[in-house]
Image (cartoon, rainbow over all chains, first blue to last red; front, side):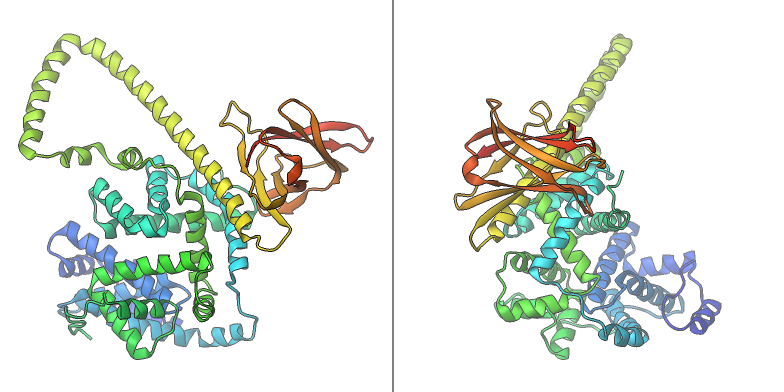
Amino acid sequence: MVTSHMGTPTQRGARRREWQLSERALERFLAALDRDRDAAAERYEQIRSKLLRFFEWRGCAYPDECADETITRVIRKIDEGDTIQDPDSYCYGVARLVLLEALKQREKEREALSQMPPLSASVDEVQLEVERRLSCLRSCMKTLPADQQTLIAEYYRHDTGQRIDARKRLAATLGIGLNALRIRAHRLSERLGSCIGDCLEHGAAVK
Amino acid sequence: MNRPVAPDQDRMDSPADEALLVRYLIGDCSDEERTRVEERFFSDTDTFDRLCELEEELVARYARGELRADERVQFERAYGTPPRRDRLILNLALGRIFASTPVSSPEAASIATPSWRRWLTFEPAAARWALAAAAVVLLTGVLVQFRQAERLRTSLGQSQQDAAALRARLDEAERRVADAERQNATSQQTAQTASPVIATFVLTPGLTRSARGPARVNVPPAATALRFRLTLDFDGGYSSLRAALRNAAGDSVWTQGGLQPQKTTDGSVVTVTIPAATLANGEYELLLQGVLKNNSVEDAATYHFTVAR
């Protein structure tokens, strides 16, 4: 069951009573994206990818939660009978509302944080953080299956000037679109990021 | 809310638009501009792709110190807090490990490509299916007559392929680690702009010639000293450590005692600094010895590297 992450507990409880995500609602949502099931799934991934970046670029602390909340609300709208002609733009509209709510909800937290010295992203400190992660990253890479290691290595292998063309070639070789490749790489880097977090927290290499 | 946005003519691919996309990324645009960018990338995947590419270029330029002062201030403000900061650091680490590694794309990509998908991309289609039909007939005959032998050969061939693939992957992984270490050292040495120039290298114990060869130490022409961070694979128990450097002939060229390990997030390390003039081209062995409480000495770790100028 997917439930809302936003709003007060009372609001969340009321929302749960009013509506719950069902298989039928999900099917309707996918059908609104595309009649073909595979194409709909790809479209869904694209929209979620855009939502994640949108919330990240707009300073949302938990982009994945906000993205999921947005999609849940859109599914609900469709389930309740709304007709959506342009799902991407519709999701953007809902995402803006979710962002406003998220920022409002976190206002007090932001005020408290503003009293603290801000985190710095100076070049030296960032490079130091990168150094700290290299060892963990190597260990975490070993936890991935060989084909996924290859994919992430190929994805990041080239210098930025050559990356775009190289990724297009990689996507063509794999027989997938560039966006699908990006989504796969994003998922893998998320997995690596989580693994690195565990590795740093426990101060030991990941087995 | 359900309204068409961003007409097709607004492609956002002019230089001015690209500048706007960059300003969007670093949070240096008006509400109106921000909405325009967002409407555009939600309705047009090409714009979204371009925005993602620009972000990677921006991060790379930042890491190379190529941003203008005002851009840098904005960038650091935008990327100073999680989750953007975390992704920035992860992307830089991934780039550090994999960027500019030796070319192996076709082979590497074919590893990741399912065999059925490679088959489906074989052109032309008529030849594809003709080959398929011929293969079926041929294989049927072979299987009837040599079923048992074929099974054994297949098993053997598969084992050999698995072993070869495993060896290739191992070689590739080791090459990546070596590249990352070299790149690490290179990036640190380029960061040393003031004199004296000290190039820093990371050495891992036990890297013998038979494993993947000694680590390669490229000494920058301006380097006055080389700093080695020696990663330790033991927990300690010594009152101190001493390091002894020998050349390929076995001659001792440098020693230092009284060393103490330091705890880092990557484990314990010992740092030694060796005058660059001490090192000529060639192979070296750095022996780390532990001094016990009764003042006796035992070998703790060995590091091999090759100096190239």
